[in-house]
Image (cartoon, rainbow, N blue to C red; front, side, top):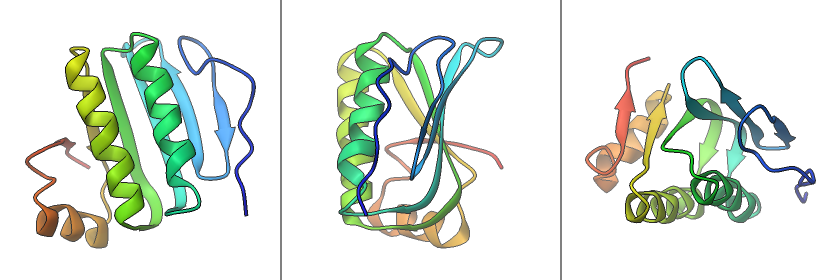
Amino acid sequence: MGLRMLEASPCKDVSMSLQWGQVQYDVEESTATVRATGDIDVATAPEFRDALYRLIDGGEPTITVDMGAVSFIDSSGLGALVAAQKRARKQGATITVANLTSSARKLFEITGLLDVFGVAQS
């Protein structure tokens, strides 16, 4: 099942609702929050990555990916996060993951990605 991207920039005061989640900007916290839901896999990872890229390229200095409602993430999803983190670092931005489920946390531990991403306490 494909994703439907909305024709909008996901920066400042704009929300995008996608099948895998939402991109929201929290003005008070000065951070872009990506609330991912469902599966981040080979079918959804490219658009997930592209949404993160738009935030980074739009100048967002702090991006939090809320993983609390992610039921599954595969290597494509992890690859999308790593690619976005590399791009963010080149531009002086940071990506933090939050609310990792126990299975996602285990995957991040096994792959060493807990050291790559800041992990917000749930």
